[in-house]
Image 1 (cartoon, one colour):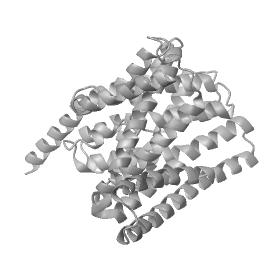
Image 2 (cartoon, helix red, strand yellow):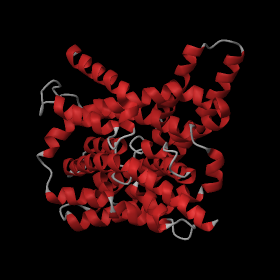
Image 3 (cartoon, helix red, strand yellow):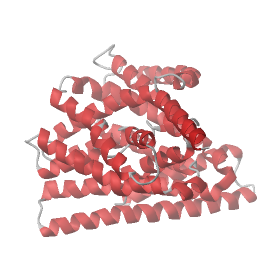
Image 4 (cartoon, one colour):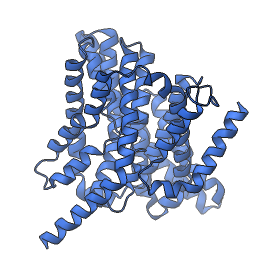
Length: 403
């Protein structure tokens, strides 16, 4: 155990020294750590035995998502969002259902052994985008701020919205489609969203008030101030989950309110939490590469790979592209927003939930998710910087033309 910990710690240390250089290239941190995990795992050098359980992977992914969702939301520019909320609102209210519906229909056509509810589960699992994998684009100043904020809000909220929808279809798949089960599944959906909102907003409001009150009295030191956001983000997620609400919605909405109330102090307060979230994300990706990729590679079929490619392209881009019609956005902006819907940690967690729920064909559904996440890791990692620069140039050229 200690030898594996030593290897992991040294690898993280070495990567941290060159992370800035790597992030300016076409290679992303998750790509590096998944590759390293695979090479060091049982299908490579054998330095990691890959015996971590799905529970370990989900726990780590959940903590990572909680921190990333909270800090990304806290750093959001709400003044811009107020002016440009039409982009994420269209993507969430029209685009997200469209992605789920198209993913569902494609799964039914390609995999005739899946039931209606299993196809819907697959479409929902792969509709959630990953805020962590999209961070290179969201933080790139070359991308117009309205597009960055639109993607940030969409990626922060869509996985939280997908949770109750996923649980709705799981309940129908496992229990049946009677009117009673449909009603209970719908109630579960409302409960997940409502509890998530209440917990996230309440804790953020109380948390920032307590931080200010204690800071004025000198009760909290600079060192311990760095821990406050980490504790608040994880608490928001965990309390909502324990109350059968959506921890993802709690973390993101709590982060939005926290950043708004903290105002100019936001960056200082969330700085340590951002670093912790980044570290946990890279550890999660290494674990994913060591324990998941090797066994899955042997099971990928052309049908699975084709669906994964369609999920990353047509299934995602077409509904988003259509949902943004008549907003005055150019074709290039709409394509850009459609393309940058990377699949990652949320989809992996969803796959674990589906397996644990005993859904028929759960292992096949998880296999499709793994393939899609792996391809997304490569495709979105490589295309992030080049396309960010491309959309920046296109927007600048369009502005000059209009002037």
